[in-house]
Image (cartoon, rainbow, N blue to C red; front, side, top):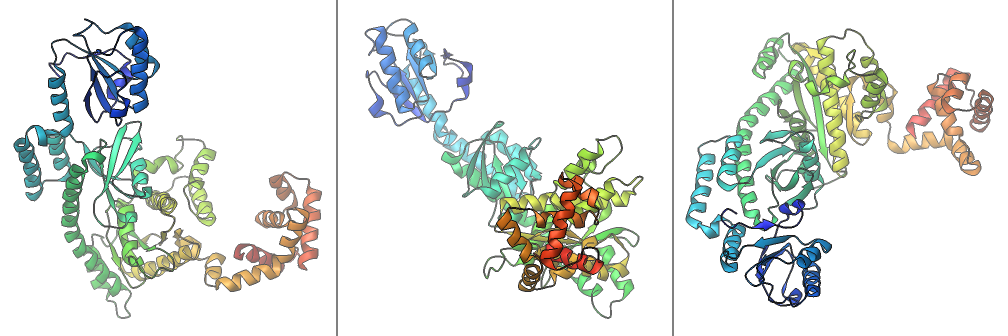
Length: 550
């Protein structure tokens, strides 16, 4: 604070230590009168000999004070024994010049702590009015935050549940970290102690967190939460304005899907409505369907509505999702879906070794069948821009859905994605494809499933009731599980590896790091216990499906 001429006598890292108030004392042991966090000011009247300094500072440290300010009026300087004691107990020490009155200093600091509402209530009220007027006049969120920083000294930003910055400035991976804090916080507002400094997170409105926005203020505002709540209300107002336009777009998208799926759909009308939704006749697109909610819940948001809101946030509101009877449906123009940040995952020559690329792809969160397809795409040469764009869309959805499900374990997000489509005639089939893929994702407990996966045995298993699948797996594999439990063996694991290796003894032995004769012995025991012959295709299929159904 200019004009006070205070000097910090302890280490520089104490400069950012906050304090909650000012306490003036010359008692030799003031601990009982302190609640913690104070800046203590003393004229050193209690000091008779050097040992007194240690006792005094020890009492302050025990009370949890923030700092000590020592005046020179009595002794002419700050004694070395006091400086040593403050160093021992890690109490910041300030040198207060003789010309500075403790009462003046306390009054100025208390006014600063109370904020400008106390120091100049009319000025602070004027600043708040200017902020509210700017919002009422249609200022953007970025303009609002620039004004807030200038008028109130509070920096702010808005992040989505998907980890994207909606407004404001946040660098690096900070938006993703703060988004996760928002998703996992037990209550809001919530303070985050990050290396970049403290942040206070406020919920913007009453949206479900899976599709919500979070206001992030660059300070600890728990003691002055009013500022954060006011800003959050302004952000909520801006979001509701944007929602008005998106409601119209959702209605148009819903009408398009209903028309395309009807029995008497007119191709020319479907094409016209596609253009209305921003998709040209020759423009490629994909259909994405989604649900989100708690399995078996009878209350809470509608899974189709919430699924649509989640998809819109996962794709940074570039699309709208129309809620249907059982799911939300979104049409994603593929020339707008590519995420440039994902180029390193697309296997471009020279970016990184193939093995590292595949490891990163396997960590995204897709099911095994999708991983295999993605791995194959990585190894392709000369892929088209469309393939790159489709892959970027799948990568984004896979990562973000996995993050949401990890942060919100009680909320199941299930997403189905169709193949790349072109023209009005493909829309109906794309909606059906994406719907089948989403139902497979629901059967798996959530996640992202692509159209490639629904044309496999996985779709057939997903349509079989759970109790039938369990009974089938237990009837065929029950003797193997029982044998493994009794003998601590690995017959089930060996069987799965053997089938994955297409029945190759040597490849299976290499993958399991055992001798080939060990594999032959174990497979022999599998055949004895199950009564199956692994040299026949029919028995191999039965055992393979039993492993997948269990």
